[in-house]
Length: 337
Ligand SMILES: Cc1cc2nc3c(=O)[nH]c(=O)nc-3n(C[C@H](O)[C@H](O)[C@H](O)COP(=O)(O)OP(=O)(O)OC[C@H]3O[C@@H](n4cnc5c(N)ncnc54)[C@H](O)[C@@H]3O)c2cc1C
Image (cartoon, rainbow, N blue to C red; front, side, top):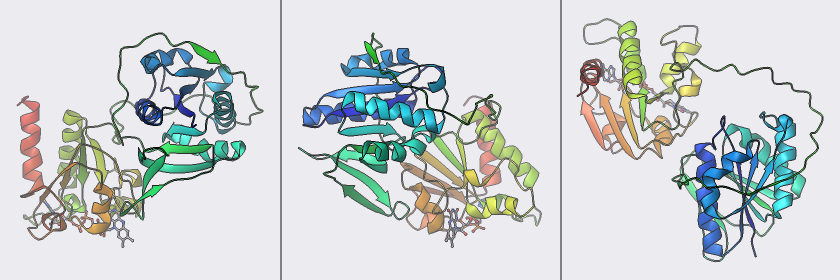
């Protein structure tokens, strides 16, 4: 019989959303296979109270050395959790923290790892889905090797939600490995300056059109920056970009300074998951739109009635000037309408 372990971590004091998604996936899988469920955490064991209602067995690795994300300590902690739970199937959230250690943990356990898992299915067995070739082909994987570590893509399913309870947590003793990395602090963009927001309801994409000559024959980059940032500020959307636009910044021209290649959506960029997406001043070419695979409702504002979006790639296309539309939108948002 399978034995399922969900690995979790916090972002501060509470479990991350991706951890809660993994818990929901683990609970569903355990029920389907009639298999025991365990949940393990690195760091704050009290965070497991949020998932006490799962009725799972709870394990934690605690101690100062394990509160920081660091390869050596995280790998040691996760290995110990897997061994303590006797897990055959290990589900881990696809956070940067766990994604970097999952393969190492699988190797230490003599098991296998698969990453970017978007769904779990199968009646009596475990079948894991993932996309290949930049989200163009979906494959369903099964393996007989155990333990099998499955790293779940964040945003693939609804998170676990229940009233908090009291989790009885078994502490797993791990000797902190020798480390060369000392965490002296965290440097992150100031609140409000971060434009990539994976949990946002809307993805706002800026294309190269924002920096092109407009119908008056002039370039209006400053106005473009003001409109884009104004929209982001009022809606807390996540900011994506086309490759053409971020490439301009990379060639020494600081066009829209708040955009980097991290914002790029597409074949050579990101494939985020948001319920809605609004593309502006972007042509909607296939290498870009392939990054929209998991955006549920796709809309675009383009001057070009023959752009890629109008050719079946968007649900709604507004053939309009994005400068005018976003200006009007910002005014409506500011007036609370
Ligand atoms: C191997 C490979 C990988 C690639 N990977 C990626 C990738 O990951 N992501 C990506 O984005 N691209 C990628 N590309 C590039 C992609 O093919 C396109 O070149 C790019 O997406 C074009 O960006 P764009 O639509 O913003 O710019 P453009 O093609 O210049 O389009 C600008 C659009 O803005 C419109 N416009 C201008 N002014 C306005 C206005 N005022 N209001 C409304 N609309 C306006 C124009 O009509 C035009 O349609 C890749 C290409 C290759 C070959």
